[in-house]
Amino acid sequence: MSTFIITYRIDNGEKVSKEFSKDKIMIGRAPDSDLCLDKVKGASRYHARLNTNGEKQTLVDLNSTNGTFVNGERIGTTAIRHGDIIHIGNATLTVSSDTAEAATEESSGEPSTQEVETLDNAIGEVSPILKKISQKAIAASSGHTGVHKVADEFLKTTLSSLLGPIWAYISDEAVSHVLVKGCDSVHIERENVRSKVGASFSPEEISNLQKHLCNECEVSNPKGIGSITVDIDELTQMTMILPPLVKEHAIIDVRKRPRRGRSVEECLASGFLPAEVLTFLKASMQLGKNIVVSGPRRCGKSNLLQILLDCAPDRQTKLLAQRSPQITSSSESVLAISLSNNNLQEGLLSTGIAALDCDLNIIDDIPITYAYEALELMLSQAPGFILSVEAGSPSGALARLESLAMTSMSAPGHIAVRNVIANSVDLLVQIQQNENGAFCVTEVAELPSLNANASISPVPLYHYIDGATADAWTGEVPSFLDDLERLGLVDALDLFTEVVH
Image (tube, rainbow, N blue to C red; front, side, top):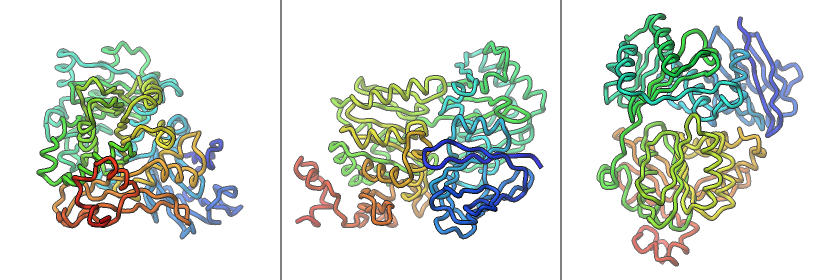
């Protein structure tokens, strides 16, 4: 069988890699474990087993005392994909299928954010690689520079021909994502439903597309760039990931940015955002509270951040950092930073500097390279922060934040990171589907300090109940209610007055 590499790091120590070529790998503290984690706190003697069957790998928790976590979620048995982040005790592990992928993992370590299973096995291997290219600028550390180009009308016309088998899907406004993993492996996402379609490419068509893009971008050595990204139009971006970042054929990934989200009025009318919740969040923002917005992919997180940005007073200076321009503003008080391919490192540097001077800092889909640093800024600086993370539940959001922060080389141990989260994040806003299948704000919770078990137990202030928003407030009082009253910000909120008076 082919070899693969397991890389692990204890707390913020040095990374250690070990190569295997066995079907079953025992992981634990026991000396006879294939991967002996005898120095890992919280690991059981026989903690977990990694099973390999061809190209598929499965991780099994062996009834360990403290559990096994993949991308922040506790698992029993789960498929493992390249890019997944595994936590056992105070150790962080990754699995790479060969030496080349291990080198890529070493340069990035971005956890996969796919939380649905319908198509994850098909696209999970690709998504982390895309994130490594666009979010971590692996070019700087691995020699792959990446190329980015904005298509003119001639190139767009040419691409419509070269991408003929999938052009109808690219042109379909209802399709948000097209992924070509191989000649006969084409997947699309239409209205949040993912499926495999019958379109196909010949090897020659893939090769011709790669050659044409290389010529257009004046690339003489494709192996040295890693990827070519083309903005087909203002909403559609195509990335072609080239060997050796991927095996065999290049991968084509076409993503369409959503148009500007619904207005405040539309969100209120649809039930996505109750008026009382918006009033409370606006008041909390005026106090400089730090807010984390959590939800699954394409649930409206960016739309909520857009609304909160629009609600901020124009006199405030604001930092807006995002990977794709889903949130927009024409205000001169907004400093916009794009966390994308070539300017990621410069953007993060600017973010760190600007965060000291801005009244409000909004970071949509916080990048792994900035997670712990952002939490430290939230802990030490007066300005309010609003971050978004991809998670399906409040507990998942906290685990996701911890997982992101732990990948930073400057991060302390798990409990210390958890303590930073508890003391830096004031409110957690969760977006999920309601009983009708529509996304809406389902929970607003305040984060207290760590409890006796060194864990965080959010205090729910608002919890969606079958559309009955009038009864959705739990009766819990936010710790900063006195500040809201002192500034006269609570007058519009009858929800807390009955509790206090």
